[in-house]
Length: 257
Image 1 (tube, helix red, strand yellow):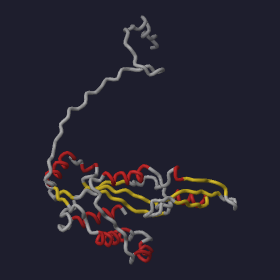
Image 2 (tube, one colour; image 1 turned 180 degrees about the vertical axis):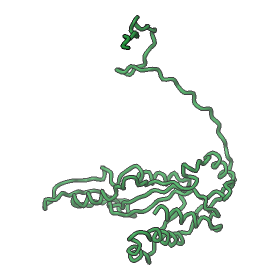
Image 3 (cartoon, helix red, strand yellow; image 1 turned 135 degrees about the horizontal axis):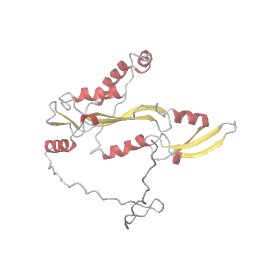
Image 4 (cartoon, helix red, strand yellow; image 1 turned 45 degrees about the vertical axis):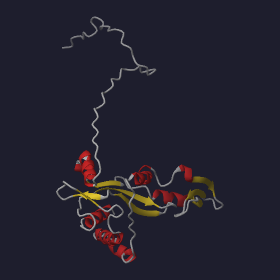
């Protein structure tokens, strides 16, 4: 999913009608659950509105309210994703099940990105269900446990309740536990740490390209504050009173040769 989506963004952004370069920098976040803990794996990408030129000396901005066409992205992503499954035994099953269906790709402008970061943060640092959404856990009439939790239907601001068996609740919850080593947040292009991007220079380049005023703030590095030793019992700072030399002969060791 990550590889197909990243390749789709780069290929469409390379078109001069959209951006004109594939040197993007973006971050992807994996999200696996729906509102009722259903299994719904999909990706969220946070993409700056532009790209670096091929020589890396210019910033090529996209339109303010448009990045790449979503209809073309859905068709291209579907093809790349199904091709990526070709070496596996799932390729034929996937093509028969969803090969002819429309795939959903959504894209919209979110300003400076802070709102998108707040939206994606819970997917990174939280699990599929928080404790505050758990309403009740009790045994059922058939001897099986019952778990009730709240959820908010899509397009509604009012929360509703859903009750499932304990076994079904555990199944829904555990299917969102990622395999060991699977990285759910991935960076691409100049957003990747190995790119060693000079962010101060990039900020200046974007600002100048957009014909805005760039202000460089130069601040001195803070002087490190020395931390005196503290008492291991009460934690209060220790006060130096004087130096007591070691007792005579304390460091003399017997000759064992």
